[in-house]
Length: 364
Image (cartoon, rainbow, N blue to C red; front, side, top):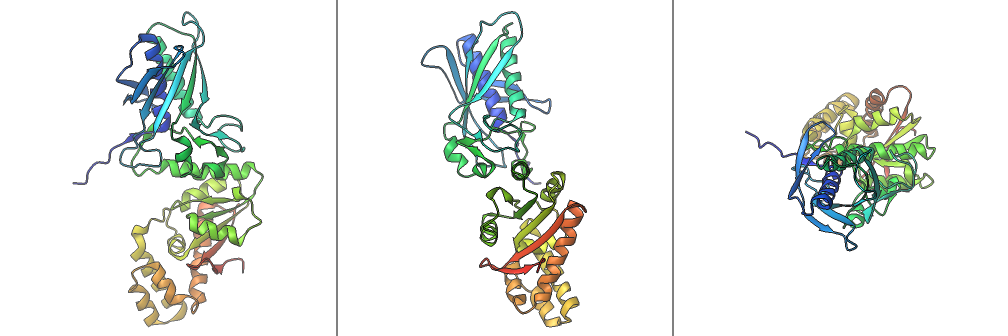
């Protein structure tokens, strides 16, 4: 029986737990070992605290949590996420108000198009709700209300952010505090799809109607070399998320989408594969062999393609000698992408060779 993959929790959940721990330390005078926080799903999760201390001035408290992404770790897995809390008014009768800010290691938004306006700390609305509720629960447990200032910090945030696309999105100086549910589900890829959507939102907010989608850093680098006049925001990496990225592009009303990819991803896109993971490589080569037989009537070529181990090996058989097969692949990409994006989006497909030269362009 396959091992059940372990769920983790988001940076937003970690921040909420740290904030609750800090408030409890202020109210109780001793640090809790763990806290229970309400997730955005309505469930609850017990989160262990990594550290707790009073601030040097004695007026506040700071706690931190080690972020655990479960069996689907991302770049923030193992990161320390902390919160400093201060009681701004004497807790008593009245309403609870939580003022949330970003400290060291939390990014600041500098471009439009994200869930928060430029100038704000990159702490998304979902985590803000969780932090507010967690602090409110800590006060309520002691019959208190009042105004609490919470500053979220990430000690290695700037270092971690260099491994993300935050700078492209206009998030400078640290990581984002994220989470739409509070839970990290193994293999859900929620963080990646959120980054794709955010990248498209920023591009649209910058006034762009055209966007270039690539599947990774290398294909994006070649695309940027091909279109040097295009602004940085107009290039978005989509990984394996072919269908999802086109749905996002259509929702945000892009007029034109360019898919700039290598041949392996092109083959999977040409077959309409929503998620172009490498596991289907043999099926894609069989399809290419069928296309070769139909387009060239060359039985030997078709069999040689079936015998290939990788798409790259097959590419060596058909390029540059069989441009009709590249054209067939490119046309099928247009058809599949059009079904995902709908009629309102014009699609262009560009296939690179493995040195970064254009092997096929549907516009030429």
